[in-house]
Structures are given as C-alpha cells and as structure tokens.
Image (cartoon, rainbow, N blue to C red):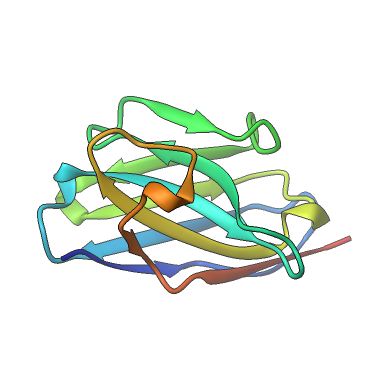
Length: 123
C-alpha cells in the first residue's frame, strides 16, 4: 500500500512559478508510475501529466505542455511538478496518484491518491 502526500501549493500571481511535491511512503516507489491531476471548483478532474517509474517517459496535457515539467527522485520517493508561467485557469486542487504498470491519462486507472494541494493563481 502506497501513501501519497502532496505539498507546495499556494497563492501566486499570474506568471509566477510553483513546485509541487508528491512524497510517497510504503511499497517500492520505483514500481509505480505517477500521474498528476487537478480539479477546479465545479469542474471534473482533469489529467495534467504522468511520469513512468523510471522517470524517462513523460506525458502532458496540451493545456500545460511547455509550462509544466514532471520529474521524480526514486531515492527520495518523491515526484515533482514544476509549474511555470502560471495562469488563472490553472487554479485547482492538484492531486498525485500512483499505479503499477503503464501510466495513463485516466484517473480511474490509478490505485493510490494523495489528499491534494490547493493552487490559486490570481490575475
């Protein structure tokens, strides 16, 4: 069983940067691919990006491509989401999730979820 804890959210202005962290405990972290998802008020959860267990392969939603970067440090059991050039439409609760095997853009395929961290971008 993997436990995930997100941190690093906050209130920033448009154009600023934030780095979110997803710290894992329990299990062998390098067995899991990790996805980042977000949910804005009144909207459905949406895919942000994924990183494979090795950290080599990454996938991003078109809305964040070129602005967000995912990385992972398996020695520290942590995945990072570097968010640059933030926009008000990036405001949401951000979640990390983990699954064995191939990563996926579908949140339904993930078995373990963090509690989320709020990101608010003011204009």
